[in-house]
Length: 335
Image (cartoon, rainbow, N blue to C red; front, side, top):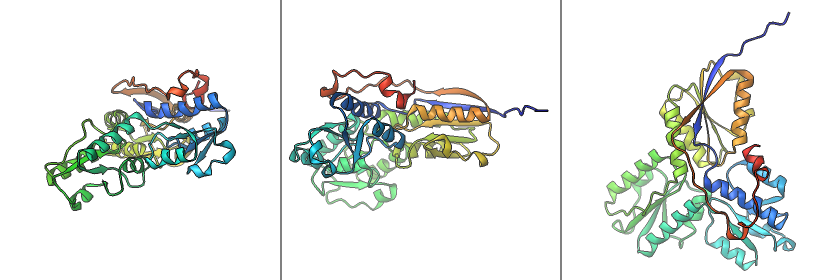
């Protein structure tokens, strides 16, 4: 006789907003539309966004990812090359021009805003202090807007403690867009304490999407036995969400790329799970994880929502006449 085994009850607190921000959505749309407009291959310099699933989905459509422009074969130089959402140093479009390449810049408009803020500081004679993570593509891109030596990178409060600028009274700061709001506030406070004449950018550099995702995780995390953030290991904003969840009271917080990465055998006795996704993570993976929990638990999904995001960034002028359908984006958004 078969005895049905009842599934344990589980509440999933699903965060909103989560997943794609307007800048990431725009960048992916640019590659998809370029493939429709110009045919395959479309080249993309670096990962268009920090998500392997997205990259593989675009590769399946005909995108080819390269690290540098010299990897594009001569016979394909008439095909478009797309620059990633993280932004690029000025040397990259200059190199593309020198090679007679046709390029489409998918830099997030909010990253471009930080570039302009840094250039404004520089134009007004200030040395630029960039708060960010060394080696991150966005930081490389921002530093690459100005001559070598014009920008100093500060990563932590400890860095701010030992920073010795040539002219302490003539500094302006900007930040990477995907940082922890709380951590960054600490670094800025220390810099302002040491350098009272430090000039802030005209608008906050940390983008609205990073702030919104962190705020809702703070609301949802208290009381969670486990908090799952969907995102890539090289995604700055996703890693910050894991940290925010732990600080806000989640017992455990993990970063996963797919449902298969969840340690189901050692998940323990759980009754409440928080679920969010970094700004580069597609909604299809969020749905995949919810279904994986439903297969194992009697799961009820509760929406934890703080704000609704309505931002929409236009794609490049060259692509605006091309129709983008729901089917075109189903590989990341679901049907």
